[in-house]
Image (cartoon, rainbow, N blue to C red):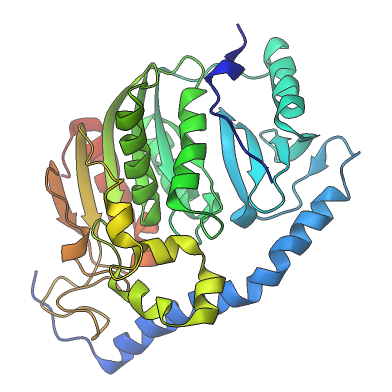
Length: 343
């Protein structure tokens, strides 16, 4: 049976001391480093795409571009078909990140099917955990957590990568739907998401509710790490600066409470299955950033990360960007996936 039918239409183109000045500066430095990286990287995105195109006739070509411009549309174990977020073309990568096919979806999917027929791609387990990184993150940023879940928990984990700076939340959810609908032999799915990845999952759940055409599998549990469940206050400040709007991407605009958040929030579902929330911050009345009321993790206030209906909520001190890499977070994530609560 040709599982291409399952594809959506894919278009191309507790109390702690008040934070010291040093800690404030540290949090601010991290935020500025993220911003500077965004600005410096922007021109290189297109250049990466052009370099990749130069290898169009090469077989087993190693991966040329970073994750920043690629979004997964089909994942089968460690094999993946990805779409370039700007130029629109598609490529097939094997477990060693070598490109085995390049061009349009039919070419790459046909080659994937050929490798399946050869028995080179074993079927996945019936229950998989899909991990999603956050804004300006990558599959590599989630890899330590993935290894922990696999080695300590024996879980089958797939790492969904998406071009978070390029395209709307809805677009990323669209591609995530393609991945979910094309999981061979999978009957149960759980999610682990960081930051923006949580909003992508919530938009996907909304889409499935509206469509009334759920995939032939069940959603089990979800761990939300540092989720902007009520938008991001700092995004309002970004939206006041034209250059930053162009550099940081439309998803940041969508998270701004005074800009795109009211419209986006209407398209977010609260999971109707068990979910728990893990947050960072300092654990007291003051966070890292004086501009944010109450405790914060250097980017989001703790209160904006809460969501009614959560089965559990736990704070583990730390900065927003590094939450998935903390050992305590990894242990708590595994505990929730297994038992439905943070131990």
